Image (cartoon, rainbow, N blue to C red; front, side, top):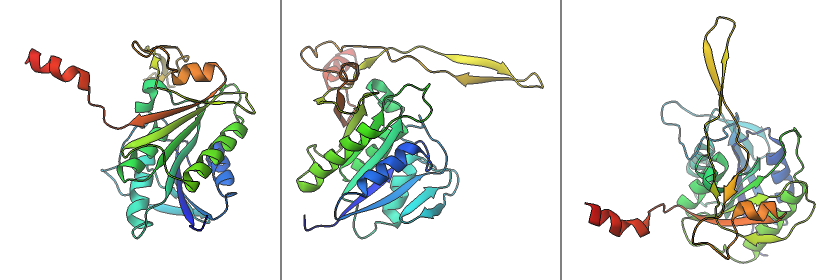
Length: 261
């Protein structure tokens, strides 16, 4: 490879997250690659594709080509880095992660990790979001397979071309407790949702609420027989690779809506 590649890295778990540092470590092992990290100063999980419009933002250098964005979101990190650090040449690849926890099915719409990749493809940069499905009783997590996977995928992108068209990014989920696993191309599954919140009171008797966690519960989508969802791939101990498009138009409903009007 005679071209020097620049990879922009961000995440939503914050600049100190183990998954982020694992990702940076393995990408910097690649030959001819410059890795630039711009990550939120604080955890921004489930912030979605949000930009900060009501207050100023500040880059803080925390290492070589490594910056935290003071109270910024993943989308802020990508947006601002492109307008300040990459004015002459865009990064060749953007990788967001490695997220601590899954980003499958409709959870992608909540995900700050996925949002970093969304922002990348809006600016015509090949982009990947990668998440490690995990048991949260293990506070550290094992990113070994995630590191092997992203290094392999990044090499393929660098040696050839990105396999997806404009405005689509690759969403990767890694099964837990695996040192090796086959890769499967999947669609975003249909997750079951419920409301889970916990009421508490502070010492002054004032109420506050914590939003809870839901178990990963999915079902196959109708009309997708013969295809594999991201959840099913993880359940089978496989790495899930899902192409995600930003066009959320419900084309099959356009005629129905016209008739309704």
